[in-house]
Amino acid sequence: MPSPSADGRVYPRAVTLAGGGTISLRLMSADDRDRLVAFARELPPDDLLFLSVDITDPEAAGRFIEGLEAGRIVGVIAEDAGVTAAYAALLHHGVTWQRHLGEIFIQVSSRHRSRGLGRALAIEISAIARDLGLRKFIARMTPDQKGAVSTFERLGFKTEALLQDFVIDAEGRTRDILVMARDVPAAAP
Image (cartoon, rainbow, N blue to C red; front, side):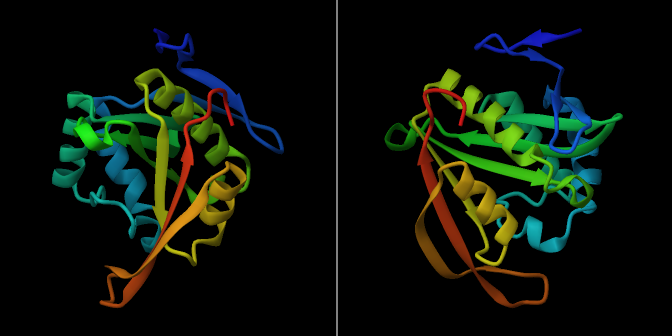
């Protein structure tokens, strides 16, 4: 059964991708823990570096789901014929001095990249952020994730900081983190 969002968007709903084909978008729910874990385990390791929760681990993914249930996280899942193709998450905190800020995470499977799916998810998350009264987004990634950097730049994000040796990969090497930000748009980007 379709469920409306505060801005009138109805989920699930279809989005047409560049080059043809449609993807179904829906809001993430507590029932998506195992689906999220399976999706994350298929991603390249570098895609997981900047996440604050290791969603390849069922317990950690459970804590992510608890954030959904508590209202600190809003997620949108993109499905292609019932298979998770991507997801976007918006983390926001009730901390007084950061209550205007949301952190955006977008993960797209390798086979669904370069088709506009990341942009479609960013538009969905932007609408949700507006509904929540947020004013600014941040996104974090490694500088060598050229596709992600390019996507966020096209969406209007600007580099705010380069944090050197801020994360450590599976082989024990430190990596830099790029922090990008933009204001939440009054209308879709």
